[in-house]
Structures are given as structure tokens and as C-alpha cells.
Image (spheres, helix red, strand yellow):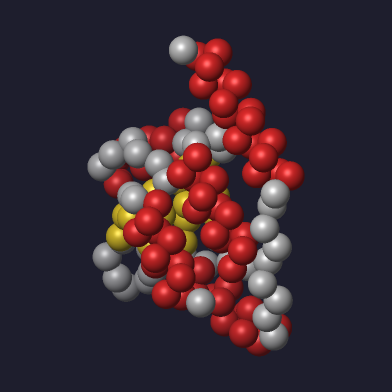
Length: 118
């Protein structure tokens, strides 16, 4: 099973590399505003997860600056489990100052949230 997952993961990453979407071109002031809106967002993900790829492609397509955190690193995995409550990816952490932290776990919900930003 590990070998099959590994092979499928490499296929997903290769296709994602070949067919990478282009970022939207914005006016520098608008892009600066978008970067300010997304500075409190973090995407917890695994590189070869198809749902994570889908979210990352949306981020790339919209030209957003969002930190990605690979949960293969113990620090991010423990943060995701302890603070978010689940070991499910993709997960978007929305940590705006003076507000409660929100954890979005479904790729469709994350993409809808990102679409509302732009």
C-alpha cells in the first residue's frame, strides 16, 4: 500500500508541476492589500495530498501569499492536532489579531473562503 501511495503521490506532484496555473496580475496597491489580508493565514498540508494540491492551485491562481506548513514536520503536526483538534489536511488556520482562531478543514470550504477574499 505504501508503494502505491508513493507512486500516486509522485504522479500528482508531477502533473501539478507540469500544469501549474498562472497567478493573476494585480495592481501593486491591490496586491499589497491582498497580502495584508492573507498574512494571518496558514495552510497545513501534505505535498502529495490531492485535496491539498487543489487548494494550493487556487492560492497560486489567485496570487495569494499564504504560508504553507507541511505536517510531516512534528512541530506543525502537533500544532494542528493540539490547536485544531484533528489531523486532517488541508486545513486553513485563520488567526486574525483580536479574534478567535478559525480552523477550516474541507478543501471546498477553504477554496470558498479564498474566493471571497479576492
